[in-house]
Length: 248
Length: 358
Image 1 (spheres, rainbow over the protein chains, first blue to last red):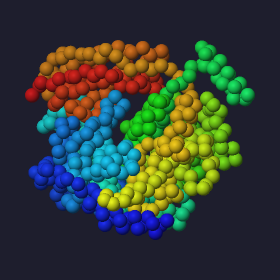
Image 2 (image 1 turned 30 degrees about the horizontal axis):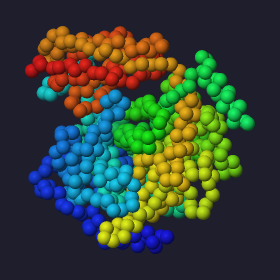
Image 3 (image 1 turned 90 degrees about the vertical axis):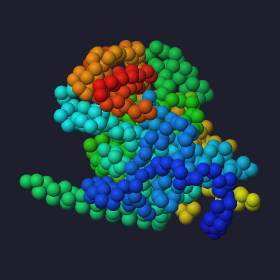
Image 4 (image 1 turned 180 degrees about the vertical axis):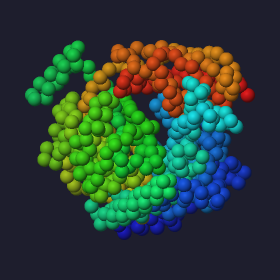
């Protein structure tokens, strides 16, 4: 069975181009706006320093990662094509299929059509819902709450709402998160911190994904992750204690 | 005969004024202290989204409410050890029981970290029994109400684990190996995992699984991972949806929704003064209570400042009106009604508080 599946993998890799590359999308992707914008190295280094423990926890499961700014304006229901570019060598041309609203507006899910490449398996005996899933991707849109004392209200943007202008101002920040696949490769997206000015994209490493069960490989992965977590927790505790010591 | 008696008893109870049938499943999400890293919160929100999508894609005809989908509640307790040990620790936590009761939650998802032997666990003994596989007491079986309501999920694991474990709480089972036994609630109540090897001219191998299948045991080829379908399986011999649909009414009645807590209605308002004080515009906003059958303790005001933005909590107020100082962009305002422990959904309508103080 394993041999059969490995053979199937070879078939997939050998023929994946013909399977998923039908008519090319007639728009030059270079001319389209990109969802993820690069962040200069100095800023990336600073963000890693400030959020090192949560970022280490998140990137443990990745092969590679990068910090980006997100062009939220593109996640609008206007039919315009744009590029989802988790990494420079990975790009999807998409447009908005729909924006689902949950909980009366507490969160939303953007669903995009993959325009190129696209699986067109009309002849195949595959469930319709599955075909649709293979030709779309989704990103979750949520908001985080930021409360500032009134005297720290951002004079430049002047954005916010309050019930008492002498006390505090409440601002919101939209962030995106989720996991989207590209035929066997998975990417995870999450905000760097509560300010949600920057996001982290991780290309997940399937060989590190935690699994249930008592198989040797499942136990090996869990042990490796537990060991990593315990080591990081100790480092974090030590760092906090060091900072508290510095403050005294 | 036994089933007839139970059915008659159920109908008598259902027609009695002292018994109101609950037609909504309420799920509460909490996280342990060892899963409180800030980076886990978006992942928890996404994981609950996978369950909401699974429920929606499967067209289960019983509404489900994720009570705090965007803000899971801290449990203020750590869990440790294997999946079963962490489940046992969670079961006896008084804070968990209190949170469940105060929120009228049928099911509770506990997000934790460092489970040493699995990605999650959910008890199935009242739905799935190898010795007596069809023990469902139709149409209404709440024996699992006190022992089958907690799903434990490791936040380090993939986002679909929440939906997987919650699926178990409804009786959905893993994939049965070809020729294997069927130790499930119904003979066909297990998940689906398939390989499509499509011949030329397309030439493609697609490996997929539905939500309750098990990546380690049944979709094991990690070199070529399965694509997850966010739905319960419905193939004739893999009908998890049938099971979930049949047990949904029972689960909805694990905890009776104790009260009717309606969303506020008739939300309206007006501009009181522009640039008062700068840079704010002052609005007065009003609403109606909405028809709840309990005393409202307070109202919570939510707002959004982007045209397609999500709403966030702003502040609370004891009265059905509030002042709102708006700065920077037009703000949409919604309201919900709360007792001391529970809150309604957000109002369907919103008030657009315009801003013109430049």
